[in-house]
Amino acid sequence: MNNRILIALALAGLTLPAAAQTQVSGALTAEQVNEVVSANGTNALTECGVSFVELDAQISASGGVQSVASRNDSGALSDEQAACVERAVVGWRFAESSAPTTARFVLSPAGVGATVMTGTGTGDSAATPAAPAETAPAPAATPAPAPSSSTETECQDGNDDDGDGMVDCADADCFQNGYCEAGGHEERNDERCSDWIDNDGDGLVDCEDSDCHGPGLTACHGSEPHVAPENVPDDSANDLPALTGDMSAEDLIGGHGDMDGERNDYMCSDGIDNDGDGRTDCQDFGCRFDPQVTVCTGSPGFRFSVVAGVGFEYDFMQDTDFESAADVRFTRLQLRALGSIPFIENSFFLLSARLERSVRLTFAHFQVPIGNRGHFMAINSGSGSLSSGLIVSASKQPLLDAPFYLFNAFEQGNGAALEVGGPIDAGGTLAFRAFAAGGSGRFNGNVGGRFFPGDNENFTYTVGAQLQINAIGHFSRFDSPLLYNVVPLRLGFMVGAKYDQRATERYPAVNAFAIFTHSYFLLRAENYFKYVLDFGGSVQNAWNVQASVLLWPRHLMLAADVGMYQAQDFTDLPADRALQPQTFDNQFQYRVALHWWWYRNIGLLTLLYTENHLNMDDEVNHQIERSLRLETQFRF
Image 1 (cartoon, helix red, strand yellow):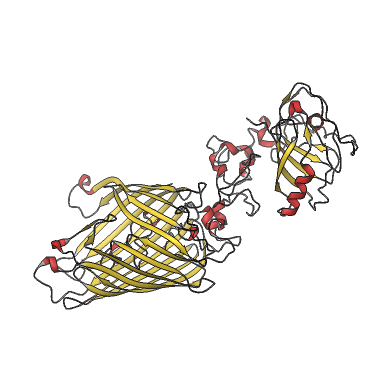
Image 2: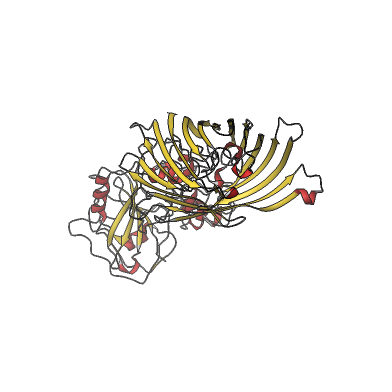
């Protein structure tokens, strides 16, 4: 394991003489610093325009500094400052007997001598010190102040009060101090990952905890070379606001200059700054830190994700005992493979499968860019021509399932679809989609699968277009309706129309959608209308209104929706049922769901109440369905 030394040097053109040393363990005193390191160059931090800088250095086998990486200053270092500091430091030498493989320096040109901060170092056997530079005199180092106490009297002042090399909560004297007690906080930012406290009480302290190796955290990167994949931002760079207290990287979304307009895999891989905040794709905070976005995680290749849900359901309308009215089962088991298409920049593909009842490939999508302004061409399995309800992932449904009455009569599936789209104006206020799809028979829920009622194999097709208006902020039809953190002010609309030729019916259809978000609230409304041209004609309409409230950020969310489907009866149906169009019961439904985020925004527990009224206008056939469902799901 690499030995690690954290040394504070206050240098002003000094050379520290190296001397033989026998054993160094624990934190280094000022005298031990003089035994370990000698400077062969001149500190030029003042010339670099830097007042204070922390460096990670890589040390050669002979004890020489090969390279350094500047970590932080009072502000971010410019490229010129970083290069200047590196030229000043590279070449310093360590005594060979105690040379570490890595070292961390905290430098300031204002002081004289060497003082100790925190850290550990090891060395053994005496060694011949490296010769000091001939051009630089070697004044004596200022000795470290004597310990002020025989015990660690202050456990949160950042000082080694008793001089035993252990600072604050790292010192056994502080183990019983209330400030150092485990639990009570999350271990999710650099401050909490370097305080020697098991903040979340899981038995792992600081960098031992996997939570300290998440996005936006740099405290545990150490001095090992850190290279981010080409399509992933380097979180060790100084482009992130400081995270303090209970903040996590997810709290940066929608703040600190982020417009919160890129938070799904499609928009985070198109090569365009969709929300105009100056950050493109994986540089955008939404793409970078929302765990539901997978194309910007550590691997630049294909990604694989799983959504698993287990639920208990009780049907209130069962006229039998509890055992017959209740059920427990895997309600969803969704597997997705996604990523960029090899050798095509800013491309994207997605394959989504459901496995809870039988193996079904339910959706396939392949998208490539057209030009460099955000336009695209996509081929998919034909679902979701106008409504986004059928293409939003099962893991993102705030009422667990989509309102199927909104699409069943309007989106009957095709074999495959071709889409083109993109922004209309430079600011992205207006965008468009145009699509065409074809197939035969009826979609059976499996890509490429179909069935033919009455052996009717008539060709089916759809053509249509949609206009998106970003009135305030930016949104996407693929965005998640779930609330986890507060959201920015957004107002958007989509309107679209299509002509649909089914195996036994023809109809034009119009769809309108609106979304409003602000702070703790989200409101979505959608209406779908069609007029069937055959069998005497039929006007059919469906609508849904959905509202969500974030009761406790990152913990509790309340969602509810209400909607209806109504259809006018056909007056001229053929006697042969195989030639009749699909028909659906008139329906009114409302649902209420309470969500608890039991593990970040990955683990979710939901309690859902559903009430469904079928054939409301028919006193004889009127049916009421009521159910209560408790479901937990985990997404990774």
